[in-house]
View 1 (cartoon, helix red, strand yellow):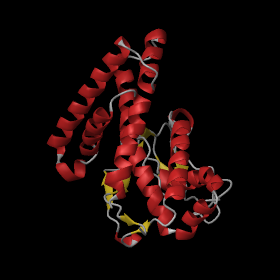
View 2 (tube, helix red, strand yellow; view 1 turned 90 degrees about the horizontal axis):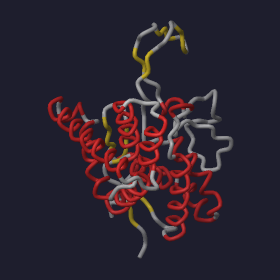
View 3 (cartoon, rainbow, N blue to C red; view 1 turned 180 degrees about the vertical axis):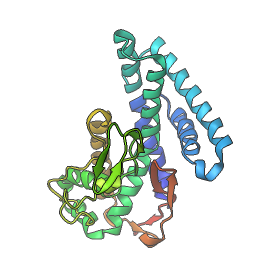
Amino acid sequence: MDFQEIVSVPIGEQLMAKLLGVEPETVHELAAHVDAAMSVCEIGDEEVSRRWSALCTMVIDILHRKLAEPGDDLLSTIAQANRQQSTMTDEQVVGMLLTVVIGGVDTPIAVITNGLASLLHHRDQYERLVEDPGRVARAVEEIVRFNPATEIEHLRVVTEDVVIAGTALSAGSPAFTSITSANRDSDQFLDPDEFDVERNPNEHIAFGYGPHACPASAYSRMCLTTFFTSLTQRFPQLQLARPFEDLERRGKGLHSVGIKELLVTWPT
């Protein structure tokens, strides 16, 4: 069974549909545009431009609906808050909503699949969760630290000349920060390349930090904890159907990464 197709995609889309206040079908369509828009190295500039245009059009349409008929969801909250306080221009609001959509429609799917792949690759860790569901919440922190769905953070602009880790950066230069690298920092984590579901402390930045922290981090943690608790209890003998090393990765430029197909099996 392809866990990615049968489980991760529908559950991830349902989670985001609830959070964003749209139908799962809308999330599926948004995800298709995001997937293409982030694949400039694979499909070419013209198609990427077309997909970006379609994605922006969808987000603007959703924004108008949320302003006209707000609901109890994240997009409505952002749209209504700005209408009341007028702290951002319309373009800035659309940009913020695009960030939420791009970060939201694909990330849960990748986190679920990446997380299970890591757990089944480290079989003893999966068995710890089977034996004690109380360990799952801490395991979720290790899942997102060890194999995050997002490799690279937002593009930054250096504000002043600075030297970081021996590398000189000039003011005005563009710079990306690597979440994956930060989450494997040996100055921050003991044995950073080891997958340990009981790691404590575990001060990773998989959900960002400061002004760019993920607004859905608490929701994501709750959903992931519920999901992996249920999975490990219902399928205690779940295992990979092919070697971990043979799993094919899928990448979207410098932003998101995941697994194309995760074949699993269990005794019947």
